[in-house]
Every structure is written in structure tokens, then in C-alpha cells.
Image (tube, rainbow, N blue to C red; front, top):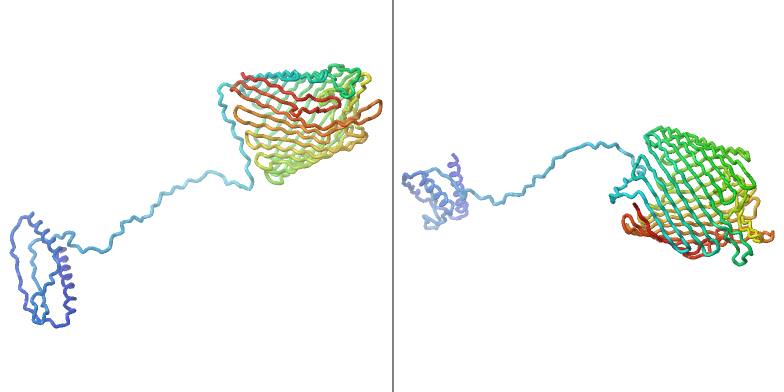
Length: 603
């Protein structure tokens, strides 16, 4: 059937090709005689020959172009019709050449879009409000590179001014449940002035045990300091000078029991601490002190309620007196703390008993409010307390005191302060405070010289009445990186005294600053700066008050440490680089330029 259709199609194509050609001829075409039919002789062939003949016939038919030769042309030149009878003797099997070619190339591009299979997995994470800056999580301390740990450290050094220096630290190792250790410290120097010798020795042991619920820690320390009374007017040296040796010896101990911190809601915490010391000097001054303190605190959500208190029992003795000077403190409080605020409301109840009896109630309140969240906080504070006069504390401030130091407790009647604190930029912290304090019986150190007898010592007097101290304190800490830290503190104070003429030996300006520079894993550099404003001392000359000005000074110091290995280091310290004649107390200049260095060894 297919062969029949193909044959019919070819016949139509041939006819369509010639018919338009004849239609375009203007002259009439004469009728030609009927065409003669030719019959081809049918011969038998094998199957293989039939296939070859069929293929040859097909190729010949495809290659044969229409015959345009004019046949039977008449006198007028018009060709007649042409007809021919074709007899197919075999099955027709066309080849590719028999088909009519499509005059358009197929689109071979595969434009089917690729759709990747999608899979949906729900995220098991609660939705959080990001209205606030999240606090940084504490980074875990990386593991130590050195496999061999050193629990002990020894440091020794020598320098000019006959400087001898030594430190030693001992520990039981890395044990989170039990820590036991001890330390030794020594430094001594001798200046250019006669008997300008000082010495300081310290020793102690300590321990800490961490249990399941509570922690227990304690320590025992011994401190020894010595110096001579070497001070006098260098322009007018006395004929006689009492350069007696003074020393201060203190044995102290303390122990504390505290509940371990747990990050749980509505936690109940407590602590109990006991500490005390025994102090004496080269003469007959003695002091003993025992303090028992503790607190109870209950937490309810953001609400804290608790009470703290202490019993401070002290006895003070010298040639002229033997006193009991004790205090009892009770401090109930309420605290409220939120994301943007913190409020402490309480009172401080103080009962003074012993050689003098008095009862006081002071405010103990403070508040903080975030001005710029996570960056700047505004704070205010109001408080008061009784400051027990202590022979040990006085000797730490001024080691050139004479005998029979007057004992009177000063009272901070109302200390008010306000300011801002926080972070200005990453690594840059600050605190700025303005304050005004009302102090009753403010202690002052003044000279008590009598160079006719060679006496060159100080005493303590008190401003009887209410003194007011106003000022500004600024603190700045710039930690630019792990390798650079710069910090400083500045103080401006204005004194309004009640009964004395001047705030004797109290400077109105003071600047302290320092830096730690980590140059490499082997080299560390430290530095410190002290700028102290001028002060005045009520120098008595032949019974006449002659105020003497103690000039301001600048003290610059620095140190370098080089780690030769994981166990051995070398250090150098330089003090008073500017080589100034600095005087903290009248006629008692500090050491000039001095340098010392040595080695350290860990084991």
C-alpha cells in the first residue's frame, strides 16, 4: 500500500512541474497522437538480484532529472503531451535519496530546564528577638603547648644602690579540687644618703579546697619592713640626728567558707570569713585585730534580698595608751537587676564600742542605668561608714611615724558620687566619676620635727569637724590587642577643711599610668608613670608655723623580660629614669636612678 502512495506522489509532482510550463505558452497546442505504450520484458531474478535492481532503479529514478526535450514538436513549435506507461515488476523499496528534503535544519539544542530535586528539613531552633547585642561567650582557654608544666618559679637579681632582689613561688600543680602553695619575696636597697636603707620581706602559704557544695580557702602571711629615719634639710644639716632603725612586723591569717556558684534560678548563697593579724614595730606600738564577717542572700528571679555583717575587734597599744577600738556592722539590702538597670537599696548600721561608744546609720544605695545599651552606663551612689584608725595602715602610708600615734576613728558621713562608665570602642573602657565626700575627723600626716634634738619624725592629727572633699576621677583602659594594654587613672581633688589651714601632705592632683607590651613570644615590656602634684607640710621652726611646699614630681619606670627558653628568663627593671629628687614626705627624698636585673627559672 505504501508503494502505491509513493508512486502516486511522484506522478503528481512530475505533472505539477510540466503543467505550469505549458500554461504559460500563448499559442494553442495541437492534439498529438496517442502515445505508444511500451511494455518491458519481465525476467526472473533471484532475491539478491531483485534487491540490487530495486536499489539501482531507485537511485536512477532519484538522479534522473525531468526531460525537457521537446518531442513531437509541430509546425508552430508547440510541443504535444507526453505519456508513458510504467509497469513495476518488483516491490519498490525507496532509499534516502527518494525522499523530499526539508529545507530547514532541525533544532538540536536541548532546552529542557533542569530541576534539581528539593528536600526540606525543618530547623529545630527557637525564634529569638535580636533587639539587643548578644553578650560574647567566654572563649575556652587553648591547651598549653608545653607538655611539661612548671609549678614552681624562682627569680633573683642584683643592681646598683646595693639592690638585692628575690622571689619564689611554689605550688602543688594542676588540681581543680585542691590547690596548695607558698611564696617568698625580698628586696633591699641603700641610697646615697646616710642610712637611706630599706628592706622588705614577705612569706606565706595558701590553700583552697573545692567541694561539691562549698569551697574552703585560707592563707597565712608574714610581712617584715624596715627603714631608718634618715630625713633632714640638706641645706641645713643638724648637729645631731636620730637615725634609729624602724621595723614593722605583721603576722596575718584568714579563712573563708563559701557556697559554690550555681547558675540556677532562686539560688540561696552564703559565705563566712574570719581574718586577723598581729602587728608591732621596733618600739612599743602593737595592734591586734580579728574580723568575723559573712552574708546571706536569696535570689528570686531578678530580685535579691540579703544581709551582711561583720564584727571588727581591735586592740591598740603604745607607751601612752592601751585601747579597745571595735566596730559592729550590719548591712541589710535589697537588689533589683534587669537587662538595662541595677538598683541596690540598703542601709549600713555601725556600732562603735570600746574606748569610745557611738551609733550610726548610713545609706548604702547605688543605681546603674544603661544610657547606650552594652556601651555606656550611668551610675549614682550614696554611702557612709566608720573608718577605724589602724597603726598598721598608718605605717603603710607613712613609715616615718613617731611613737604614741593619736587614735581617733574618722567618719564618712555621706559620700555621694555619680558618673559614666562603659566601653567607648572595642577594647577601650572608661570610668568618669564626680564626687563629694563629707568626712568627720579626717586624719592628716604632719611633720613633728625637732632638729635641736635630732628628732625627724611625723605624727597624725585630725581635722575636728566636717571636712568636704570634692573632685573628679577618670580611668581609662585601652587594650588595643592581646599584645598591647595601656591604662591610666587621674584624680583632681578640692579640700574644704573644717579646722586646719590646709590639707597637709595631700596633693590635689595625681596621675598614674602604665602599659604592658607583648612584643613577641620571648620579649615583654612594661612601663609605669606617676605624676604627683605639690603638697604642703606645716613645718614648725622655733615654734612658728612655716608651711613648706613639697614640689610636684614625675616618676618614670620601665622593665623588660626576655624568655630564653620555656624555663629560663632574663629581666631588667629601671626605676626613676628621670633621676628626680622626688619627695613624698618632707626631707625624705626617694631613691634616684636605679637599675637591677637578674634571671628567672621555672621548675
